[in-house]
Each structure stands twice: as structure tokens, then as C-alpha cells.
Image 1: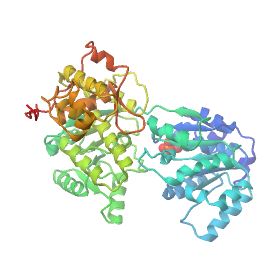
Image 2: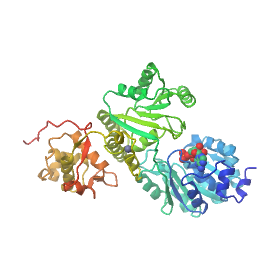
Image 3: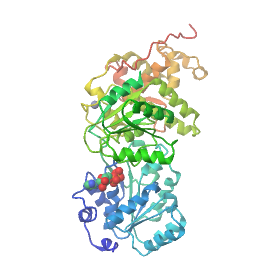
Image 4: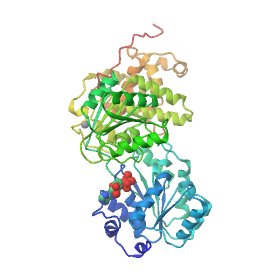
Length: 526
Ligand code: ADP
Ligand code: ZN
């Protein structure tokens, strides 16, 4: 009964309505569906919940043959296939959770042309046997879901994803559609390059979540600050993220004592307890889930009214994903975060001590720096957040904390000029650590070897300590007054905008509350 759908000469809109029961396409869906039906490649960047699945499901049904969907999320395949069966679509999956017999039955259906959609894990798809079978059947399209897994820069790197470029070589006639909710420009470039999608049309949806208000403050008394925030949200569902399991347990217990329906969630708990807490969060009203980042993947609860961060997330993408769990219903929601410089030290140490390769550590450090720049910003948060994903936004938004009550600032024009000229005079080839040594007049081995103690900028910034300078550099980066190399080594260079500051025409204002104390240290040689 299933296979009849594929044989009908159906229009995409007809399929959307009759199979999925939706009245109309959303956002870029229609253009994407048409591109793929016509046989073209597509790269789709759409936030979570934007409706990516229909972008390949509809063309897979309309086109002759089977649509092959590559997904790393084996745990979700069963659900997706069940939902498709519910709608009367002939779908199946192949992964390591099945026994041999079940796999052979799916292969039989595939070869008999009975399937509209086949979900496979990447390592399964790349097996010579399956590739060989696919060559002897009709493939409607390849959909590469969670395409950011191909990127080293991303947080879920999977080496098998890189080998998916083979699809283009072995099936040059079959359209490919790559999809992701991770949109930063670097990841996007890597997807195009690694999957040979240079010819693909790119469909970039807005990542703006207009109903979420963003608020960030410096941490001074975390419990009091959290309590003040939560008092405005009594009886509402929300998530409180913390970095460590211990902190999750302690915070959940403390909130429960204070009369909140607070439950803990982290990977160190018994699976049954975790599942029970998750169910309560989903089903009951007004539950506050106190959790590590282990919580949230695939959670689709529409009325989460707030997401609070007691510690810095790992990256801007992480922050966007986590805060994005608030306000799915479109009603007002809040993203609240407190951060402290002590956290930054902890996180830097965690990165330094991790077992990752040096390149990975460098990437992690840069991600932390951009997040910190966001936290310390004086500009509209929404502009910065969307800017981090390469999305131009005509701000200010009018309802983030910086828009509602502009922070007190200090005039950092002179330090900014010193910083920019030290970058320039040392040849735009070094990272902030070395340039800060020059500014502070530190006779490090490197400074000596390079003769940088002879620069006119050597020691001109000895009145500020390293922390203060780091903050200045972060802000200059965030404001686009400095840039780093595209390879990710963190070396600094001037930008077109730097000129305005160097020539004295433009002022640089930084947050007063993030202004570090003046250094008491003297140049060693004086
Ligand atoms: P994503 O994969 O981008 O996170 P999904 O494909 O899971 O998003 O879709 C999110 C939700 O939006 C689903 O419940 C889906 O049924 C719904 N949806 C998607 N497209 C439409 C549409 N055109 N009309 C109505 N609902 C839609
Ligand atoms: Zn704003």
C-alpha cells in the first residue's frame, strides 16, 4: 500500500498537504524542495525546529527511487521511521542496532524499489556492500543531515562524514542536500569544501529568535542573582545550566528547598532517574530542570520560559543551541547568564589539560574568547549573536539588556590605539599573548629573540595587567577592529575599520563592570 505514493505524479504542495497534513511550506522549504526535485544540490542552514526534515522528505517522495538519508543520530531513526509510517510513507532504516535478518529484509525492500526513504548511519552507508546495492537501484537523492559533523571546527566532528564526498564521485547524477542547524561561516565553508558542494545552492534561514530576550551579567553572588531572576519566573518551566555535576546536584537541592519544582539532570545519574526527571519536565508544568549540557538534545518542549546559565557555555553555538530551547511556542522567553573571570580561568585550564590535539585546543580557546567577548559586549546582544553566525542584523533589537539599559562604559580609545599599533608594528603575525607581552614590556624569550623590545610600542601599556589587556583585545575582535587569521592560529591583523581608531577619529568604549584593576607591576628594567 505504501509504494503507491511514489508512483503518483504528485506536486510538492500536494505531497505536503496529503501526506504530511500541512497547509503550506514555511520559509525556504518550497524553494529548497524545488531545487532538489529538479536535480540540483542544496546546502540548508536552518535553526532547530525550522523544519529541515520536509526539505528532503518531500522531494524523496516526489522523485523516482529511494531517498537515502545519512544521519549520525541512530537513536532517533526509529522515531523518524515510525512517524513516516504513520503518514503512510514507505520508510526504513539500516543501522547497527538491527540483527542480520532485519537488515536483509530492508535490503530486499530497497532492491525491489519499495522504499521512499532509507535512513542510514554514515559508517553503514560507506560499506562497499551497501554502496554497491545503491548503484544497482534508483536513488532519488542523498540527504546529509547534521552536515556540520564533517567539520573539525564544529563540536560534533565525525571522521566518517568526510568520506561522504565519495557520494558525489560514485553518484554524480543524484542530487545531494546537506542540512545543519550550525551556521557559523567557518563551518559552512568546511561543509562545502569537504562534501564537494561548490555547485550547491545555499539556503540560509534567519537564526533570529525574536521572542527571546538576552541578558548577561557579571557574577558576584550567583545564588542571590539566580534567585532574583527566578523570582520573576515562579511557576514557569525552565532550564538552569551549570558546568559540573556537583553544582547541578547542589543547585537543584537548594532550589527545591526554596520552593521550586527543581530536578537535577546529568550524565552521572542512574539512567532511570534521569529519564524520570526528563519525563516530569516534559509532562508537568513549572518544573525547573537543573542540568549539565547532557540535557536538551532532541527535547522539544514548546513552553520553556527561560534558560539560565550559571557558567559560560563552551561556545557561541552551544549558547545559541541551549538558549534556543526557550520560547519554541513564540511567546516571550528569557535567556539569562552570569559569568565570572574565574570561570574563564577554569575553562582555560580544562581546555589545556584535555587530551585533545593542539589544533583542537586552539579552536576551543578561540571559541571561549568569542563567547567572552559576547558576555563583555556593550552593543546589542542580538546583533552580536547573529553576527557570530554571519547573519547581518539591522539592530539594535530594543529588548536585550544592553538595549534596554545601556551599560556604563569607560573610554578605552588610548589603550585600543596602543593595542592596534603594537599589532601593526610587530608585523601582524602574532597572537594576543605575545602582543600583550610587548605592550606590557615583558622581556620574554620570544620578545628578545624577535627584537620586539626595540619596538616603540614596547612597554607603552605597562599600566594595565594581562587580564585588562585580554579584555581589550577581545572587545577589539568582537567589534571587528581586529581580525584573526582564517586558519585558526589566533594571529592578529588589522581590519579596514582599525584605521578609524588609529587615526584618532573613532572612540572605543568598553564595559565599566568588566574593567579590570590597574596593574601595579613595573617594567622589569626600570
Ligand atoms: P528541524 O529538523 O529543522 O529541527 P523538523 O523538521 O523536526 O525541524 O520540524 C520541526 C517541526 O515543525 C515539526 O513538528 C514539523 O512537523 C513542523 N513543520 C515543519 N514544516 C512545517 C510546515 N510547512 N508547516 C507546519 N509545520 C511544519
Ligand atoms: Zn539588543
